[in-house]
Length: 300
Picture 1 (cartoon, helix red, strand yellow):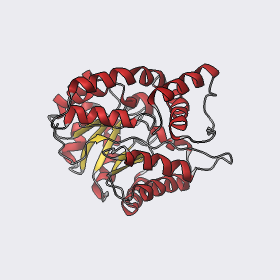
Picture 2: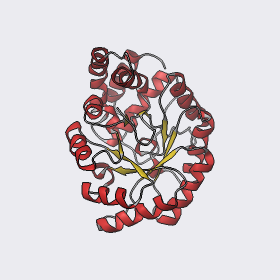
Picture 3: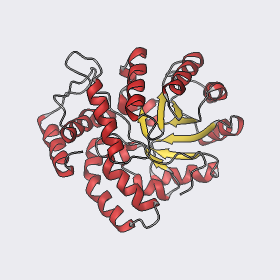
């Protein structure tokens, strides 16, 4: 696979882990990042949906970004998702991301339901034109409730050359259609926890932004599919082994966060996980399942 932007591979999204006082846990953040580096991820993501960015204050978003950047130390590219509500705030956060050491940013649409697509294109374009870093667009209406059509994305890319990545939450079929429409003008990263990983890559995606619970396995799958001398059969076997966990987690975004954190807790040997409300309470069966999957994966 060929990346025009220079960014590709597995970019696990750091979970926001809270301590008993409800504050972001510096230790849990550092342990996540160090485990990612130890397992040779291709990049790291922060402040996406798995980071519960919608539950963080502006100060906490800066805090988490800066802690991740410090722990990563520039060892791999850092992608920072920006979810600010207007052009000025998004631009300011993009500049802060550049100062912190980010390599590219992912813009989420502003939380304005019913916004005409032309206005959404104008919003993204206004930020991209002054952003000091390469820009990706998170186009995930299934989770965010707002997004661009393929035509809107094409119009944005053609008018604003700093937009070089589309971050989607899509099936392999949808990525194949999107890639054909975009004609390779931008790189595509997929999410969905990695559940569509192999089909997404075969359809033209250059990378996956999953959660932080099984990134080591996903990284090995990616390398087997893309690196010279890789083993596609081994990749398929590893993917088949991890797929039940991904299906379990991707029932909903809330499930993904509650039980993905539990899998990560077990694998990293963290203490009790404290959820920030609103969050669905973990059930005994859900915890049993998450811990069973974690035991099968082993420690990070």
